[in-house]
Length: 74
Image (cartoon, rainbow, N blue to C red; front, side):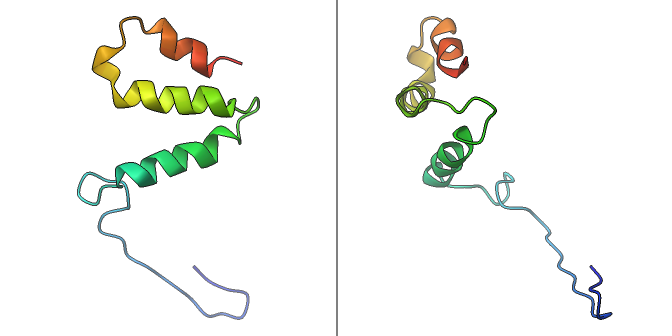
């Protein structure tokens, strides 16, 4: 990256954060989801977002995928 004054900066990342070789913690994933759900064209309702987190945490027990879909629809 070149700055206006001519200085340059560079960084090399062998593996980005979130890659399987440098995974995010569950807490980091959930916090990222919470930060992003408010940025949509139609922000996700907080209660729906928390319910969605709970369902995804126990995804094998979700009997009908429509339950997940209904939570993300505006």
